[in-house]
Amino acid sequence: MLTFNLDPKKDKITRRESIFPPSSDDDTNLPDHPRRRGQVRKKLSPEAQEMVEIRNKLGMSQPDFAIALGESRDKIINIENGRLKRVPVDLLQNARELLESEQDTRVRPLAELKKLSMVQLMERWWEMMGTNDDKEAAILLGTTMTTIDRWRNTDTRPSSGDLLRYELVAQRVKEKRTPG
Image 1 (cartoon, helix red, strand yellow):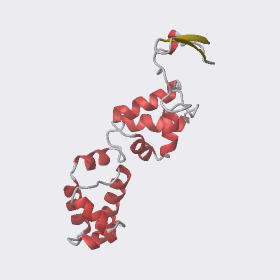
Image 2 (cartoon, one colour):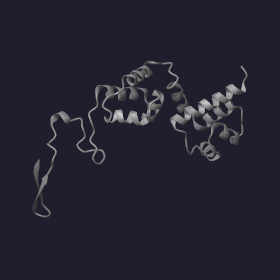
Image 3 (cartoon, helix red, strand yellow):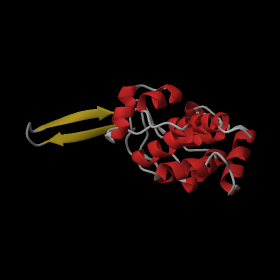
Image 4 (cartoon, rainbow, N blue to C red):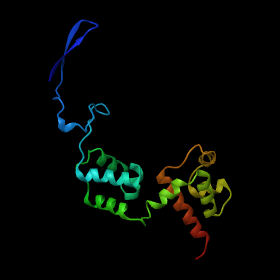
């Protein structure tokens, strides 16, 4: 497409050519410009759109959603950005089941853990592991004393995946401590 622009400061007409046709009324929901260089927002398939809606209803981030589905974060991102044309049927079915299931063990514990402060989480984990010693807790959780100190000062917080992992480790240590 060929356009002409008048630059009043230079009293000059500039010629601009574009290989892109003017946008049609069908593309009203697409942004006028790419989000990143060379990247244009793609229209999603109905399955991909359903995946996005399910994730949003669950109130989960893409990485959390991927963990809950047992899928890679990159796959979820590629589906939601329209780079993956076909959503695997089993993945979509798992997402539907995740949404429907009130008792799902992957979503509910994560939501409960996210509600707790870091101090409350540490008290919970230390109690489950039967320790009051930060150094011992760091060893059991597979982390460093620097990380424990940052948690104590509420400077940092584990990612969702790590929250679930530390909770699982604390539960396993508790199970080994108590005969039964």
